[in-house]
Amino acid sequence: MASDEDLLEKSLNELVEADLKKFKWHLQNDHECITKKDMEKADILDTVDKMAACFGPEEAVKITVEILRKMNQNNLAEQLENKHKQHKVTGNMKTSVAVGAHSKQIYVYFLYMETRKYQSKQQLQGQEQQQMLYKYI
Image 1 (cartoon, one colour):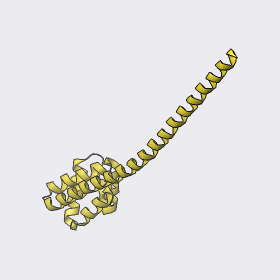
Image 2 (tube, one colour):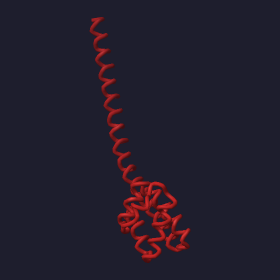
Image 3 (tube, helix red, strand yellow):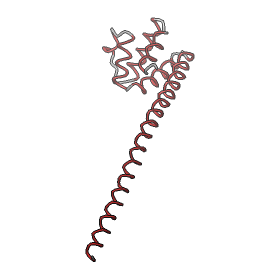
């Protein structure tokens, strides 16, 4: 499964050099976190790393989609958005399966502990009854 950074890198690789330059221009002018100096010699990987560091991977994808739309790169923006949504759904499904399996283990352990508590309680009651009998004998 591709990470958000991988999706960004693949999308930016679709841009021709002039469009990449325009993308960086929008990035540095629309967002204070990215400076002109950051973008001067930045290649695609540097750009993706800087965006992820400044905004976090999730927000970096949203910002990239916005900038691509400003640049009339609507098909590329839509592809990135769709892949990102698919990536999130797939990631959530894998997390749910893992959590579900783990939850089952926890539940089985919980049942085991409840059974042990019940058995211990029964033993204590049995011992108390024996002690009471011995008092009267």
